[in-house]
Structures are given as C-alpha cells and as structure tokens.
Image 1 (tube, rainbow, N blue to C red):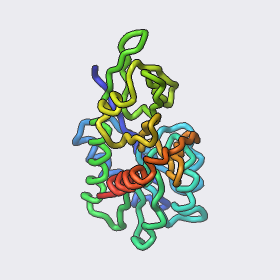
Image 2 (cartoon, one colour):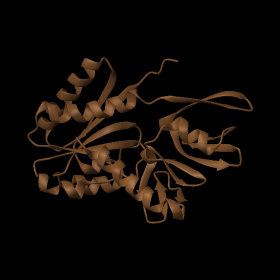
Image 3 (tube, one colour):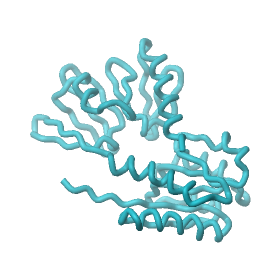
Length: 241
C-alpha cells in the first residue's frame, strides 16, 4: 500500500531575512528528497496563534519578537492541535532551557549553519517516513492502523481497544501480543491495562499521563518508576540533535 507523505513547514519571525534563509534551507532539503512540501510565513507571535486552518508539521519559532515573544506564543501553541512540533530559533542560547515544551524538538542558533537545520529536518523526515502500519483483525476482517495514529490502547479481557484521533477499534488481541507488535518506543506500558503512545502525551505527573486531547490515564503503582525513567529517556532522545 503506497502512502503519500507531505510536509508543512512554518516560519514565525519578525525579520524577513530569516524567513528567506530558513525557507531556502527547507526548500533545498525537501527538494533533494523529492518530497511534497509547503512553507507558511508568519511575522509575529500574535499572528501564529491565530492560525486555525493550516496543519503545520514543524514551526521554526523566533524567541525575540515584538509584543508576544516566542516563549509566550509557545504556551498558546501547545493548546493548538494543528501545530505539531516547534524548533526554536534565537541569537540567545542562554534562554534555551525556557523553550522546553512537549512540542519542542530542537533549538537553532542565529546565525546558523545549513547543517543546524538539516540535521533536525532529517531526524523528523526519517521518523515520518519510517512510520509503519500494523495489521490487525477484528470481527469485520483485516484492520490496518498506522502507529502514529494510535493515542493509547486499553486491555479488555482477550480484546484490546485502540484509541485514535478519529475513533476507536476493538481488536481480537491481548495487550501483551499488541505490545510485541508495537516494538517499544514511543509506546510504553504504564499500567496492566494500558499502553500509551508518548508522541501524543502532553505531560506526565507522578500518578497520571495527560494527552494532547485532554484525556488522562492513571499510571499503575508498580509501573511508576519505570514510566518516569522511560519518559525522561524519550524526552532526551527527542531533543537530542
């Protein structure tokens, strides 16, 4: 089954020069991959947080802007389901620690070398292209579900319920069998009855997992230490350049 993948990139910066330079690097990258892409341009924090129509895969977000800077915009963007990942751009690396959020996947210094952006785009590109499908069966027959669409999975006797952004499916499969099919990260067992996709997790507290869609799940008592450790490892891997 052929899968068409396209990429939407956005640049939010109050300086047109950086739009031109970042845009040129992105164009070169995706042209070399012969991938479909589109680049959107925004010139203030106020403008980007009003974006409701375009689905944006990666947003290059300047930290130093006018009335609303990038850090303030990030707080709003983290509530926006149509903007998925953020790469911060700044001439002040000392503020990078303040830029960590659950959508943040990197930091690019100003001025930057082409490789600074290429390495982050390559990482995201490989992850998207490697996104595989899992073949299940239910009472209606074969069911094909893309891994990235799975938010979490719940055990129900000898069945599982797979929750996705578009609904849920009941599959004849045990949670243990499903765990083997998923093959590890970003999927993590947090309870005897739940496996979650960390790519959809907004944050993790001491006792629960909170998802981007507002749902929460309780972490099993015997799983807490391992879940905390694995989640930290996941975050470090995501932020590593």
